[in-house]
View 1 (cartoon, rainbow, N blue to C red):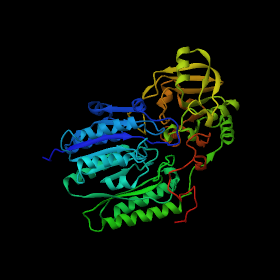
View 2: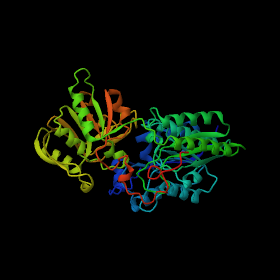
View 3: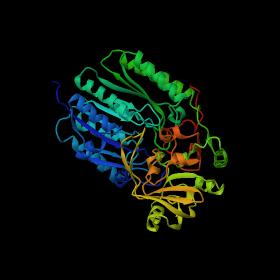
Length: 505
């Protein structure tokens, strides 16, 4: 019988848009995912999330898991010092419960706090101080992680997702667990080689449906298969809305340091991928449209009687999943002005408007001020609308997937407000719109509308793409714009593309 090992398993995730004026607090974690100790396994075991893979690996290998916390907050501004101190405390306290044989962490990799530009690196440093240098630490990351030198140096195993939308969270975490088991067995001695070039952006924003990121991942997989000693060859597209020194795309190679030539091979693989990443930095497979163009396409789509499937419009620059405020109304305003019918719009995070609809009640007509309330000077003004409440919900739903399938989430008290043929889903909590259940709990079936406008950049494609006749991206002037000249970077290393010209690579 194999030896029972004690393994620390935890999730602390946040993608921080440092340009947001909305701080991230412990309450923001509680609105999305904040589970402690014995709460974790019952809630997440049957999901497709990383913690579920930790639980499955423990069952396979006979681990005794120490699980202090599973927490994730919607992307927003910097995590407050108070919140960050509590998140760290919970993880470090688990180190005092007895000897540990290994650690497996589900992190994002782009978390910035009021005290740490490199939060994940700080967390790993704290663990190393408590556990020493020999305990293997496996880390999984979002494909949009900003991987720092400190993170690569302190982690033993580092595996980012390989899909965007992220539908391989479980598989990535299970691969990490397999490597962790081998490390604890002593059959491998894993280390991470990390390389980052002079890019703020690139890799086709990480899209894995063709284009440069797909090509790079295919090349990485070939290197991993054909090169002895390379355990995993991976790339991160980075998260450009974090103004930190080590922001941007990177390559991570987890290699077996007990293999004589593995470190050299890791360096060579990373260099080759980095060169191609720089050379192809400007390639993109998706066209971004301005609001007039997107509106014209919406008008044409509703006039098309031959194909009544929805046109899906991604209000990507107001995507809460990129730390934008999620209550922008410029696209909504354009659709209303064009008098387009059969539109489903949302989910728009506006607690005041949601409360007004609940106070009025189902079927009531009312005037309500909607949207652009968090930083109106930058993307306002709000809209004053008169409409009818056609749906109300407490906001609880379970993701149907493919992304985060099985995960329970909540919009908080939510409402569907119909205004001149446009149904607007309004929530209390701010969440990226990547699951159709977010509309269905309000009585709105997305497939029955001619236009579906979602607050998302790319994750929506997993659930909404299959039903759409076409998908377009509209820049409504939100905080998640791809135009980096509109953001005031102060800490990013220079020179860096596209803020500066760099050699072709």
